[in-house]
Amino acid sequence: MKILIADDEQGIRLTLKDSLEEAGFSVSAVANGNEAVNMLREQKFECVISDIRMPGMDGISLLKYIKSERPGTEVILITAFGDVEQAVQAMKSGANDYIVKPFMNEEVILKVKKIEQLHELKVENLKLKQQISEDTGFGNLVGRSPEMKEIFNLIETVSPTDSSVLLCGESGTGKELVANLIHAKSLRKGKTLVKLSCAVFPETLLEDELFGHEKGAYTDAKAKKIGRFEQADGGTIFLDDIDDMSPKIQVKLLRVLQERCFERLGGTETVHVDIRIIAATKKDLGKLVKEGFFREDLYYRLNVIPIGIPSLRDHMQDIKLLAEHFIRMYGKDADYSIAPRTLERMMSYGWPGNVRELENAIERAIALAGESKELKEEHLFLPQKKDALYGSGDSLKLRDYVEKLSARYIAEVLKKTGGKKSLAAKVLGISRKSLWEKMKEYNIENEKKPLM
Ligand SMILES: Nc1ncnc2c1ncn2[C@@H]1O[C@H](COP(=O)(O)OP(=O)(O)OP(=O)(O)O)[C@@H](O)[C@H]1O
Ligand SMILES: [Mg+2]
Image (cartoon, rainbow, N blue to C red):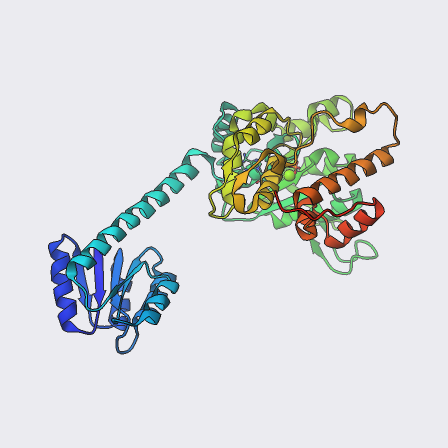
């Protein structure tokens, strides 16, 4: 371990340096805070031992500099005898330890050895964390199952090519994440990735979004507009929900795929673009072709490289890994544990909303677990297997059923959140105001109970 000593008293500086060197450490010594900063800029030290009171930059300011600029460096401050306030201030500002003057050199060596152990642990921990991110998946895509490994391999193979890719998978399986990765691993990575869902625009707007228009193309077209294909020039375009594209636009897209060119709406000039197309769908596009809803020629052009992303229930082996990934993501650095029954429940549930549903469940569970830091089964809020409302025998209008279910769910969330409305609203994903309105509408009493 490399140690830097900063003290304006030459006697202390030199004897401390000598005894630490004797103990096997490599030591440099300077006379004040400014010199210490200069040294820290040039070399890496694992530990700094600094007097608090020094002319110019004092020990506390030096400590603050280290915390912000060299956060991996441990700090021991030297305080004057009887100055408790200084010692408190040192610890509050984030020093690892302090020594009171006058001190025995053996005492310092002991403290430094303790800090060395702590430092090694920290470094080890950091290494492990990095290793985890390498072992658990591929970029942000987590998974170790054969199903996911196959996806990783496909991404690795297709990314550097310019072939069109068709991503098929249920909602929440990670199609967008895969599209991001393919772009990021392609030669086009420095250029833009333009994303557009064909499901959110009606036909005329989608056409305008994709191809742009010339000034005066129609009444509202006050200026020329560059469409998404042109924006993506040199890069990649991700066309989500491609099954939602109308026949008219399908024809135009086919031409873009075949000739990489098109005309802006209301224009005659042919625009050439260099783009890579990634399309995605939640539906069975082959079936839509057979039923006549999707052009066969377009389907074959898009489907050059099909990647079928498995539903979560088809790679349940990854559940634990994924849950831990989301715990790291939403639990900041806190150590949350997953109760054994929670894991069992996760393993037996069908996850119709796939990884997105799991992500939401973990985020909610972390909010509900609170200080206990243990994710319990009930924190997941997964729907019960048998719903009593179904079994009751009476037939209900859909609206009434939905209302009953909402009322019951809201009451359940309120109970589990100990009646804390703002937390309950967060879990439910609605505003406090609409929670309050719904409670009135459904006649829900707010029980105030301690959080479980
Ligand atoms: N294998 C995975 N590893 C880590 N996170 C994942 C994985 N798959 C999905 N996710 C996460 O789940 C969420 C949903 O993923 P994404 O938006 O890519 O799904 P999608 O297939 O595009 O869904 P939709 O069809 O509803 O648009 C995102 O937050 C994403 O980061
Ligand atoms: Mg998506």
